[in-house]
Image (cartoon, rainbow, N blue to C red; front, side, top):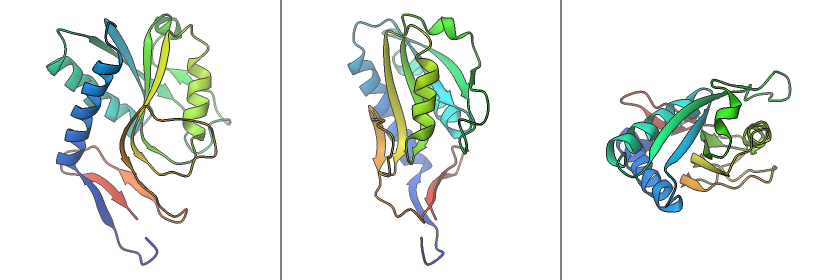
Length: 170
């Protein structure tokens, strides 16, 4: 914030409740699908995907299976380096894929991630975001959103999915 204060916008408990709600929404929006593939963007997006996978496997494993992959991308400059996936991209063919990230600012990282993922013959592509900051300059929509937060461009949102942490606005 402009006065230099830090504001905790999501506690660890609140994040867990949001992820449980997202898991139910994922299940509801993909009725009839036997599997989804969570693709977490490097860093906290991948950590969030791990947590979502754990919830889906624990509470919904009888209904749907959940695979996991990491999308390796330079978030600060996605056009500068190579974008890669921790698994063979062909494993995404004919699958329902959910691109997962902690915070969406302009939508640039997600747009380049989507472009890369669409090199596979994906059946369906959705996005899951913990905090949507409403500063999009790229046409990226969010299917599963934990918190929509209007911020100024000077403010910074940081998510830490480590135990005892949460999401903070600076």
